[in-house]
Image (cartoon, rainbow, N blue to C red; front, side, top):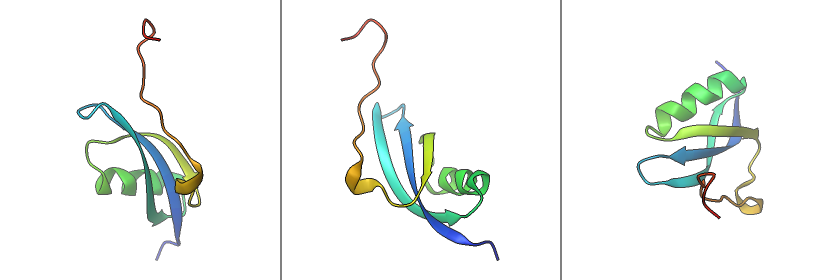
Amino acid sequence: MTAQRIWTAVSYNWSAGNTHINVFYGPHPSEDARLEFENQHPGENLIALIPGNHEMSSTTYSLKYPDQE
């Protein structure tokens, strides 16, 4: 059995136009955790995967096109 750990994932949902912080339990190797995240959160594009729970100390911002302020 693969060791599990808590991860904080930063993702973007193109349909909703929002960035999200998602905390989940997944396999220890980051590549396996990426695959687990994609299975658990269809439609979310993973931007960053950070070991640990950083939900309370993180902030997300909307993506902007280069011509937006």
